[in-house]
Length: 407
Ligand SMILES: Cc1cc2nc3c(=O)[nH]c(=O)nc-3n(C[C@H](O)[C@H](O)[C@H](O)COP(=O)(O)OP(=O)(O)OC[C@H]3O[C@@H](n4cnc5c(N)ncnc54)[C@H](O)[C@@H]3O)c2cc1C
Picture 1 (spheres, rainbow, N blue to C red):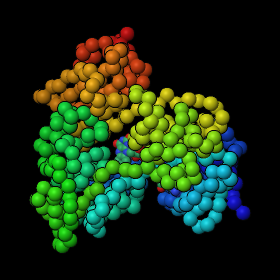
Picture 2: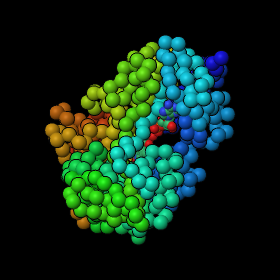
Picture 3: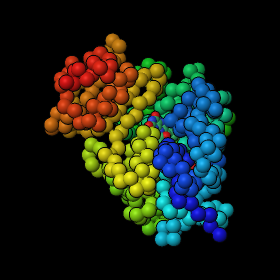
């Protein structure tokens, strides 16, 4: 006999937790189950690099505790893997052979980190708590750390690693953070990080690992890096296999419409597993950020409740601090074709660049060195405001001063 629920959420992270909150805000009577193969209350993956670097405790990662789910009246099936989805019969099969039926389903299954084809016991990706725990152990004894891939896993991890460790970054392309910022910003950041001791090996790859007292990492360029551990930050791939096997429309991620609905009327998807409309380009995209997962989780839940709410589209929104430098990238800020306006003060390192479309509306912004007012730039882009002139980029904007300048 299968257990039956009105609403089932697969994935207990940014999107799934927000969906549960939203369902419970509007209905206390419906039955809700949340399933995850990790046997933990929801935690923030975003701050796991701080935990690995010893800057915060494991306890601080958790967003809620186990009791939260009891109070929300949700059945939790943690430590259980969903292995099959039968969309026609509205049924999930779990790894212990049990079955769960649903009225409406949310696939908030996120993504997995890409691994290297060559492996070592002293290498790890960072996506799950078990990865973080392994990296904590490896980092404790490491005098030299190498990371491959120059995105939001490798760079924060190297940045929060002990200052005494030698740090190498191997990058396939010719610049760092190429999915987050434009080439000019990459160059500025590379110079800042290099001053902090980061050694960047561009247009290179690790082709072999020789084990020994220390790892010998053979580079495609012919060199060799001797390190005590290897961080693998080669991007992610969406967990879309369940949807694909069930016959739902899947591109790279699970395709969703403006209501976070998949090609099946009662199955929704949100977050890193879902491919939905980008706010600026209108094209389907997996944004891969926490805020999009939360927004889509909320939108999916509202529509599962038949509240008929369209989502305007997702925005890139990455705000981080790496090697002591604050960086924010919001909206469309990779495009070469957009008109840009910038300010840069080399004495302080403060850099701001906005990207405009043909109608002079702000479509993206990169802030380096000071990101306190990044929320206002987000607001600016979301509201498709017209750029008033370069002077708005100088000084820190408060909401009041910003409104005055934009008036
Ligand atoms: C190290 C790191 C740093 C990051 N830094 C930033 C940052 O600075 N800013 C930012 O915005 N974003 C950042 N991100 C990305 C952000 O964490 C993700 O965008 C966000 O976690 C996506 O949430 P999600 O709910 O879609 O999926 P996920 O967080 O991936 O969670 C999906 C859940 O589904 C579960 N699951 C999957 N398949 C199954 C199955 N078949 N059965 C049962 N359970 C299943 C998984 O166990 C997992 O718990 C970072 C991510 C990492 C790993």
